[in-house]
Amino acid sequence: QQQVKQSPQSLIVQKGGISIINCAYENTAFDYFPWYQQFPGKGPALLIAIRPDVSEKKEGRFTISFNKSAKQFSLHIMDSQPGDSATYFCAASMGQTGANNLFFGTGTRLTVIP
Amino acid sequence: NAGVTQTPKFRILKIGQSMTLQCTQDMNHNYMYWYRQDPGMGLKLIYYSVGAGITDKGEVPNGYNVSRSTTEDFPLRLELAAPSQTSVYFCASSWTGNDEQYFGPGTRLTVT
Image (cartoon, rainbow over all chains, first blue to last red; front, top):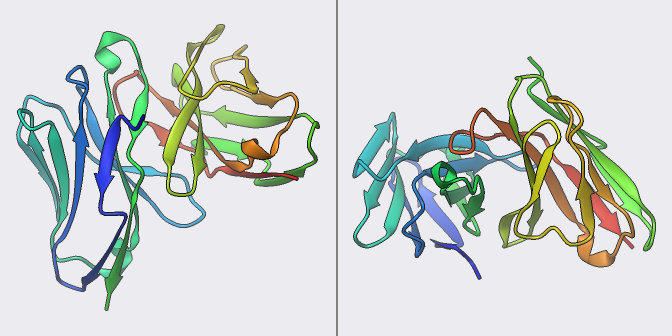
């Protein structure tokens, strides 16, 4: 059973456009929601993360929107660039309750066309 | 800092063989993790450790074993390799169980 559901599987965006990736979860005990970026042949790297006490977090061109009541969160990439082409994973964990496990979505392959 | 290092980068095993995937971190992190990544499936947690001498199972522990004798090292052992264990394996570490995890470059394992 997939604890975190991610969509779309793949996304093609023109340079300068907005990329939007969505995730949904069921377990209300989750209290940490990171997004990881992975380039081919590399390990994932943290891009941005949010905790449920805020509804939005922005770092440069990357924004997480978080809707606690809907149990959904999304990644917005503004002014998308070819260098953003990578696979993006959302994740969730409940580390503060001791489980320490990150549950990953299935990933979104983003391609930004020049 | 080298961060999280993994060896080997690639390995081909025959069914029934055993091997150890090595993972070392130099950030003095307490928490360490092993994940496997299969195409279209995201990453699944195999085992994790909250400190030297303490390990626990993740989502998909069957067929694997781990040990944590030092803070730096967290090897993953495959005892009887099966084709279902063909995957890319990532080791990660973090300060606590609820913050950024730093990933190694991965080991691509094929079992035939």
